[in-house]
Length: 180
Image: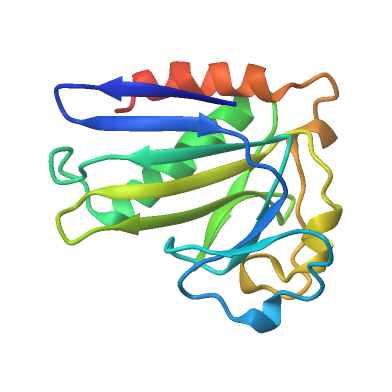
């Protein structure tokens, strides 16, 4: 499943999708954080960050942007993406927070959204953020998520029972139209 927003004037695109079960290893990944992948494929990725899990019930948003045209630096882009996720969570009555030096978004010190970007020398971004909505969280126990031993993860469904990935995607599209 994939949908996207496209701005032909700037050449930007934002993709919304859902992956099949997969562990991905970012450029900073230490294979020791991959504890027991079992039947789930492991794929090396050129995104930033450590090891994470993607699977059904998770909204993955890829930002294909020219940050120079937006007058954004990498830190500001990450801050904006994290704030965007926090805004979505607030729409569902879920307060969240950030943790210094641990990119992503957290609820009760459990990670609900992971970020992993890549920015080229020319200021083009790719990869993005994944938001756990209504998924099987067990595969996260097979890794040290984002390289943090014992890091717990959570999802929107734990706070709002009747949630769908599609509903969150539609809200995300609406919010992003006002940001980029």
